[in-house]
Length: 222
Image 1: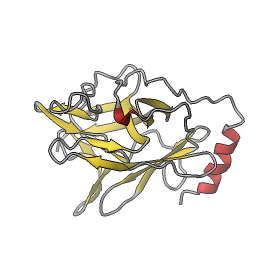
Image 2: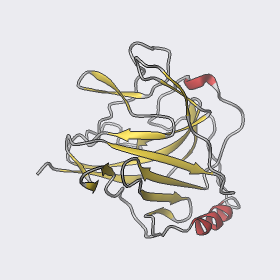
Image 3: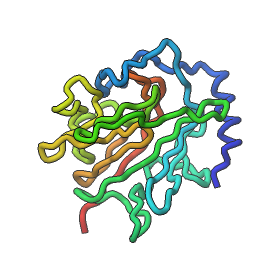
Image 4: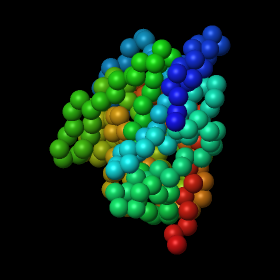
């Protein structure tokens, strides 16, 4: 099983290195938004990150820290996000083209082991636009892969009925679909292939920290 104490030791060592979270800088493939207008001069640093499925299994499928990189829950090195779909009937499944989406909780921890709070403060019943706590979780295609069709992307957008709200949506079949849900994210497979993504600690309207890229693979429909 994943040993948090080992990650904590690694994360504490990382703080002795030259490691600066770029508070105030957006990911190169990110979009500015005014989410909550809660930006402060302080920023958080990620000691490690956990990716957990939201479903019957509620399984941790990937863990990241700066020194060890990406690992599975048992501490084995990985470079690909494993079976991210948590199906109530069929269990853990991979992505297939145009298949079911994944719903993933993304937890960021400080180097001292404290989990960074992420939550939904409010949600509009009509648009489903969320007001998040000061910090929230996001993901972006890695640099150079912004035009991917492996997952539905095409750039972030605000909901058409809330043009000044946060950019939490993508467009699928001409409809806005939410992918950023404060403490969790949705990933929608599109075409068979591979794309690298980075998980981001989002702070109001910018990135405070970002993981290494990890590959998402979408398989052809059988």
